Image (cartoon, rainbow, N blue to C red; front, side, top):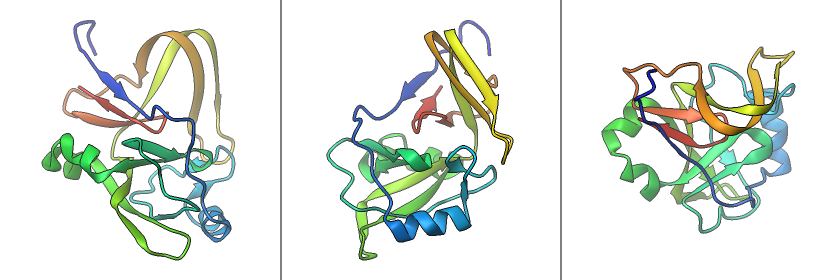
Length: 163
């Protein structure tokens, strides 16, 4: 990544994340959720989630306590279907009765970057899955340095990073 590379971080503007149902939470802990950092285990692809209430009106949302980004399909479509299909794993969003919210999808990046900052940084490795967990403020940069061959990344903040 050179100083001239420009990346855009797109993430939810709401603090009202989606909650998984109790059944979905239990299933997540048995299969795809790392209980050390409450994020999907490394290597997990598409994830279907069952949530307690509709995602809301924001184009991007998340099941925040589980690290699952949720987007309107229209939002994902705006990035280009070919790019989304090439760079993301897409899962379904279901209501508490198992009916699909057809206008919504979960997404997981085939490539993931951490949006880092230069001040008040703290970092640790998850003792269960080995993932880097990071928090910082101020001027942002990406870690690890993004591959120039990739145009769309999942961010550690349940968002998307685009070149």
